[in-house]
Structures are given as C-alpha cells and as structure tokens.
Length: 168
Image (cartoon, rainbow, N blue to C red):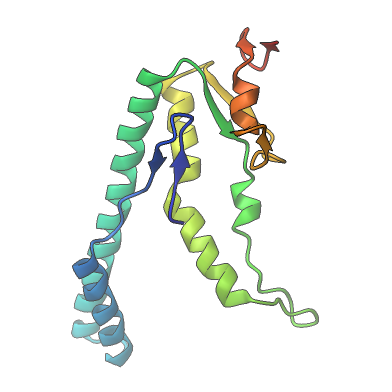
C-alpha cells in the first residue's frame, strides 16, 4: 500500500517501514536461512536477526499509529473513517483441494500490504483518543466524486449533530 490514510486536507499519510538497507539485509537473511541446516545454532542466530528486523518494522508502525492518531485527534473535530472489514479483506485466496484459489500469490502480497498499512490499529487508537468524534462510514461508493470533490467530503460538509447524526 502506497498510502495508508488520506485526509480531507489533501494530505496523504504513509506508514514508515524498513529502510532500503534494512530491506536488503532482510532479503539476505532470508536467503541465508534457506541454506542453513534445521536445528543448528547458526539457523537460530539467523532467525533471531530476522525477528529483530521484523520487530523493528512493527515498532515503527505502532509508533506511527500513536503519533498519527494523536495528531488527528487534536486537529479535527470529526474524524470520518471507512468501516472496512479488514479481516474479510485479508482472507486467504488459497481455496480448497476441490476448488483451488486463483492468484493466490498476488492476494498474499495484497494482504501483507493491507496489514502493514495498519488501518485497524489506527482506527482503534482514534476511537480511544477521540471518543464520540470518530464516524464510521459505509465504504461503498466513497471513491466516487460529487462535483469536483470526493463524495465523503460532501458528506462531511453537513452539520454534525452527534455520533451518526448529521443535518443538511
């Protein structure tokens, strides 16, 4: 996922992941892991190094979620988010023996991207930090435009009268 969140101000937010050098090191470590013998001390050392890199990526994502949710809660009175079914979106495309899935590798990559974007964590922290000000919107048709503006922006122009209640 290139963009994790898009704001009504036009700002596009991205989650920091591993740096280029760290990504290259992770690739080298994964190749080294494939060559090591199962049960060896060297394999355990390589697995620990891989775990450290992945933990660093997770820590960066969590830090980004905390800082972004704090900033959004302080800057905006109403925060509208799409009510996405992330668990359904990241389900496996593997299928069964009788009906095998199609494009399984592509779906696995998409799943990794969706989970790395941290959508669920961001919404959860927003609800914690801005209680009653987070409005979940049905994601259907939110990418359409209303005149020259996104439909969701036109929706938010209406006066907010409390959780889930708007007036024209």
